[in-house]
Amino acid sequence: MSEELKEKRKQHWLPASYLQFFTTDPNEQHREGYLYRISAEGHRQVQVETQGVSKFHYRKQNTHQSEGLFQVLESDYPELIRKAISEERLSSNEQCKLLLSIVALSCRNPSLTNQTGWENWDVFVSLSNSFLANHLGVPPYSGEQKGLQLIANAIRRAQLINPLPLDGMPPDNEFKQMAHILNFVGSTFHVAFIKNLGGKGSLFTSDFPTLFFSLDQLNVPLMLMPVTPSLLAVALDTRFFEVHHNWLSSKDFQLLQEFLLVQANKAFFASAMCENDLHALSEALRDRKVRSKGWVKTDVWQPIMYSYSRLLKQRGGFDFLTSRE
Image (cartoon, rainbow, N blue to C red):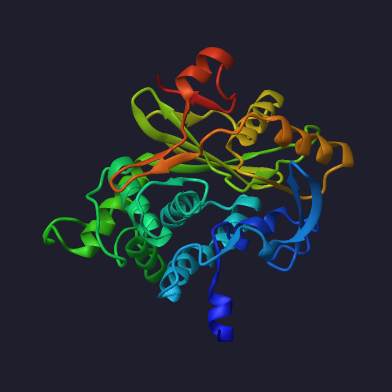
């Protein structure tokens, strides 16, 4: 096997660009940095780039195509998070790019039960198109140059300003399709950042870090994902939610930990933690009841979704959010 093929057979489904913000040394936020991996067997320090990777996870042929798509999203992700850390305002294009990064990170996760018989790459294309069609209200796309790749490439090429002109373009025009999505995302979806202030402990993440919430019959109007030990990304449909304040209460921190425990597949990832906290997370993974993370069929993507309406009734929801129910 050639050296090139040996390298391309290693296909990441949890990108180093995401995990690098959970390294044990804040000055080593890159793929060569180290972080704690906590599993039911215990905890150990591992290198960022060695995690979330499988041999030929997406496909065995044309591996460069899948890597090329993800590089479009991953290459800009660190800069977006650094802007969020420094409290710089993200543009509409950057907001859309971050939302798509969150969606892509979830769609490519191996813990989704594949009921299609397809290679994982074809599943990813189907899932991304399904998300765009079912959750962003746009027509489904076909082929490897459509869906997330179309949008990601377009956003990277140009600095587009919302709202984008739609009149006078043929209905199948790719720019019009992309403009429709950006206009929708810019007007209804927003990515906010919630701070984890001192005193409660650091946020950790997992090998399936995105939490999806439904609101009654509505699909995924809310997504939560830890992006650093002190920052939580909240992608919300502003027609149904608004951010009340930008910090986690002790109750929010506890709720988030409970959901992350259920959502995790096999492991947590964390930066610096005391030994007792590391042991406690390992024991929690060992003692929990494992649940399905969702499934995909040829025409349906069904991630595990938590009912925000039920959470509101039982626990009062998250303090930083106000529901427009």
